[in-house]
Length: 153
Image (cartoon, rainbow, N blue to C red):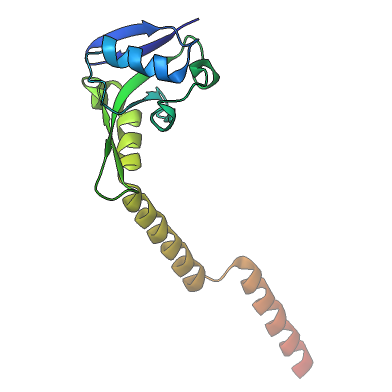
């Protein structure tokens, strides 16, 4: 079996029934990248394969990659902050060809923005809950008022 790796304007076929270290070295060599480059793959849905974390592993690449699937080659750039990693697609016109993947890579490259967005959504939801009482509270309020009115008469 094989997997297809897209990079630049090209498509390459690789045997993934080998150790991850050999698979990654083969990609770097055939795609014209330096041995010191840190690379990884994403599938066409934007899911990161996390091969860069295991790039020296003796585990089989076929345990991670699905046969006959197409993957997009990305460069992993370590930043000064050890928790921050930037992902750069090595496929030409990624925004046009795979806009979902391009967007997903932007989000992965800026996790603090993702956390900030989640916090803003939570704040909005809590404000809406405070400002608009739930229908359960409204019905309980109506029932209480009806009971009080009946007791007066």
